[in-house]
Length: 260
Image (cartoon, rainbow, N blue to C red; front, side, top):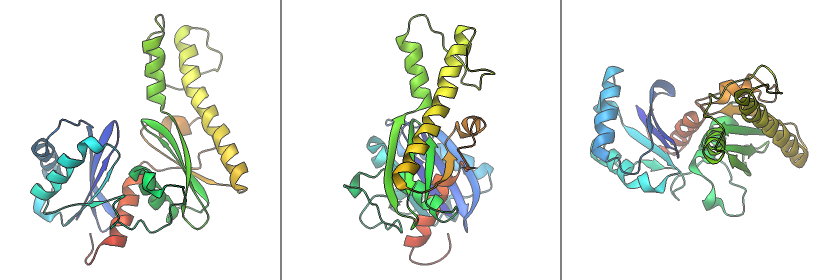
């Protein structure tokens, strides 16, 4: 079985896959002060509830965009899962496609994983819209190569900034409002965030297609994507596992022998 670790700015996701099939996925808040032993206590307990023993793990792949957590996550792998993980972005990790940006070493591990997950599952060219801490657009050409993309502030970050920087605005739930013109302060805020971000996504996708000169298959992922995709036809597919599946694909390409 393969242990997949995807460490993002807000949440670190752990998943166990067997022959490409998901056996379990668990999330914990990203914390640079969390030790390898704390990760192990939490993770092995959840794995046990799913009937997965630590000794069943015979490979680990890590994608990490939070450098402060790297040491403890790699220590977790060495101490509890038998060795160093295959780490996305390291020179010995072949993603299986070209990274067509000016400085390929700057490509985030999550963006590489998104590309790997999308290129083999959906018609290309395409773009992965990842609604996480940031709102990322990862553009993939017709040959499945990563072309670059867009990084915008995430929905939650923007909403939190609005609440903390405007003295009279309350903290409200992110939800789809019934109309664009808010008749109350809460409705106006929800409209600005919800329809504002949909407008950002739709407008950016039009620009990307104009620049590429091609129609793009749009895959949405991230925690808020079901809510946002409900309000626009611009997102063609919703796949919240695309990043993890991409890491499984990268592992499969790089492993020396035996199924994960």
